[in-house]
Image 1: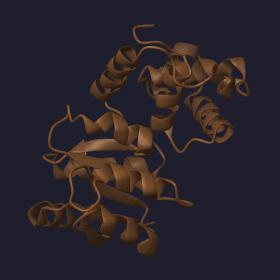
Image 2: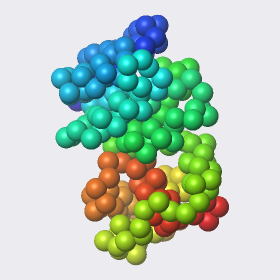
Image 3: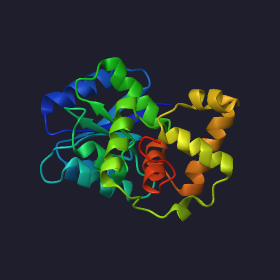
Image 4: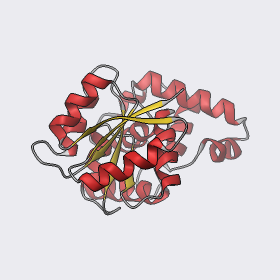
Length: 218
């Protein structure tokens, strides 16, 4: 199936460049572009893309506000945040707002296409560096923001898997750690997301730290 994408960025060269790179892929098609956050929200509703590439700093409505509005709608697209610097202050808030990951604007064609495919499949684009920054942010915030009871519906094994996901481990790494098949881990992750009403692994990481299931440095 073709992955349908909308590119939202106020810089014409960025939009054009990403559009050309993505349309060169056999399984990806750019179906729309937006020059600001307001247009991104409108395009998401009208075109129903699978993935929306969202710049953070845009006029009228910034990418963070647009992400919140889009993810609050029914069956929203996966949102991949675009940023110039990997230490962008907005990355953390964008992930909390519902983004599935982030991508640097200087990403190669291969990295861009791989990122789109990854989030379209329901996975999170969380590089180890991003996970470390999330942990650092939670350490700065201090006490958990949400009650642990949110996780009461999970089994002991599911809680264990969630903790490992929160530490940035892949399904393959978790399978090796727990001495189970990778498909078993995938099943656990799917059940965790379903029980907690989460969109993807990114949201699971955020919730794991916010509820105190795992702690920075723990």
